[in-house]
Each structure stands twice: as structure tokens, then as C-alpha cells.
Length: 450
Image (cartoon, rainbow, N blue to C red; front, top):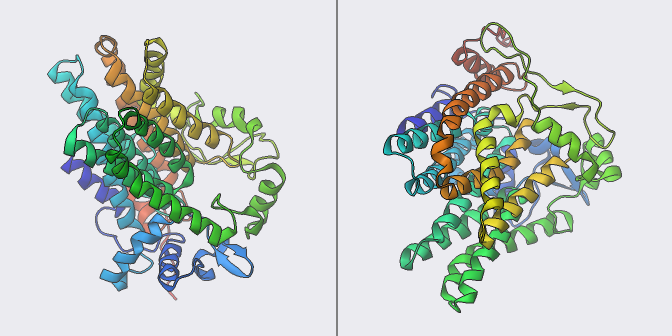
């Protein structure tokens, strides 16, 4: 864990040297935090620029509130860091996600029929794969405003899943702490990105059924108090920003392309599902080259219907290759769930809730690598279900994980490095860092001095 945490720090800070860097539109969260302290929900126009939404002459933004709330204590402690907290924020989110996944994996393997050797191997390899064979690597390497809200939503979602599973076997004080941890995590996920928060709201109701049946109301306070507070804040903030409770109003968006497509076709549309599924779960390899980073990834143009706002996809490596180990685990988990008689409501409801989140992003009006993160709560939940319920199946499939984990790490790491080192929107030092650690030889001229 310490080694992986150190690697996360190195990735987030471009080799450990660059912490206070102004990432793309990252200062918008600082501006939002300052306006919160003044008692309004506006944001400075020069901070949000091309992502602004103009509502009755006021500049607003649609990104989740949690990164802005985090800026309040950070700017109070170190005002000189204003506008440059994105990398520290991303590192903290990655740490939350890593710790939560470590807890999930440890609890699942503890009851496994695997040998001690295989449990240790799968536990360690699973953590390495979580860092290097999920979108966590991409989000941490590109901490623009688009990534920051998503990485926090992902982290809090995994944390909520951990506490939800843990609460099912906990008693007494441990139960109260687990429910409180779930409630806080679920609330912060909701405040980071609505699509991550909605599934855990359903899981909260599923957890509550146990205590309602037992006529034990005290645990419900720990389960719902922080979550209801976060939900109330989200609803009030959404209404104050846009006059609705959905958290966004594309009619106010300054981007004319996204605005018109959203207005004409909608943000989510069911007939996009086949295209979204084919994009994120494609079996075709990214373009291969003989020298590091071995892949030459780029935007992929295709014959997308007019209901998409962009004529290309920014999914540079499909989930089926980037996280083949989780896809295999999730498929096994679904098989176990369908074959197992008497599967409880928590398992069925949790699977359905995260499947609904996946369905939404498959119907979204743009395709990008960062949006594939929305698929991972479902993949992780089902994989954990497999590890917990598989019995004799897991020992028979341990070699599947042994093969797919290294493959996924190789594919995702080098494809991500290829994308980031050629992303002209990133700082020059970031691009050179990704070129260096992947063995690439990208040439990026230094900026001209005035």
C-alpha cells in the first residue's frame, strides 16, 4: 500500500516535483468556493470560460460541488495555492479509492477457499491493477476540471460500496461506524457527480430494510443523517443554480454544439446504447507500433448518428482491454448471481443500481475515456460478488486473473501514456513525464520566452 501510494503521488505530481500546477479550468472550483462563502452560487466567468452556463445574466457551472467544498479549508490554510489544488485533490481522491478497494478485496478474499499464497498474490496484484488497469491512472494523469469531479465521485462510490458490504456482517459499534462511513461516502459521491450518487441512494434504501424489518430504528440515524444532508444541499444548490433539481440546464450552456444537440436529442437517449456499448466494449486493439509506448492512440472518428454532439470518440482503449480482469470478474459475478438460489435483495438491488448507472453512460451524448469510469462501480461490485460467493469456482479461475491482470496493466498503462504524451492541452512537463516513464520519444519544443 505504501509503495502504491508513493506511485500515486509520483503520477499526480509529474515525478514528485510539480504539485502546485494550474490545470485546465481547475481554478473554477476555487472561484465557486469563494462564492459559496459569500452566500451565492455564481462562479467567475474567467475561471470557467468555455464551460460556463449563463442563467439570468449570472455565470454558473454544472460540475459537482465537492471539489469546491474541499477548496474552502485548503485555501484557508494556504492562500497561495489558490487555483492550483487540482493535483493534490486528485491524489487525495486516488488514496480514498485505493484504500476502499483494498478493504473490499481483503474482505472478499478472507473467506475465499484459495490457498494463502494465492490470496496474497491476488490481493496484491488486484491493488496494482486497480491503480494501473482502471481509469484511475488516466484521471490522475490529467487533472483538468473534467477529471477532478469524476475521480472524487469514483472514489466515494467505491468507498460507499466497501462500507455497504462491511455493514452486512458488522454488529454494535462497528455497524454504526460502517453505516456512518457509507452515508458520508454516498453523500460525497452525490455531491461530486449525480450519476455516481444515484445508485448509492438506492443501496441506502436496501440497507435500511434490514433495520426496518428488525424494528431497530437507531442505526437508521447513522445511515441517513449525512446522506440526507448531502441530498438536501445538492437539491438546494441545483435549484439555486438552474431552477431545477437535475443539476444542469443545457439551454444555458455557452457551448453551442453541445447545447443544440442536448436540446434536440436529449442528454441521454436509448438509441445511442448500441454505439456506446460498441465503443466502450470494443474487441479491436488500439493501433500498435513496434517501439514504446507500443500503441499510437488518438480520437476515433466513426459514423456516429447526429444525436452525438461530436463526430468522434475519445475512448482510446476499450474497457475490454484496459480492465479485462474486472470484465472477467464481473461476468463471473453475474453468473454466480443468476445461478445462486436465494440471492438476497442487497446483491440483486446493488447489481441493478450500478447496471442502471452503466446504462445511462452508454446512452450519453458524448464518448470519452473519462466517462468509462461510470462503468466501474458495476464491474467492481460484480467482481466482489464473485469473490465472495464463488466457492469452488474461484480456485478454478485463478489462472484467468493471473493472465488478465498483467495484460490489462500493460494495455492500459501504455495506451494511457500514449494519449497523455500527445495531449496538447496538458503542460509540457506532464507530457514529457509520460513519454519518459513509458519509454517514448515524443519531442515537445519549449515555449518561447517573451
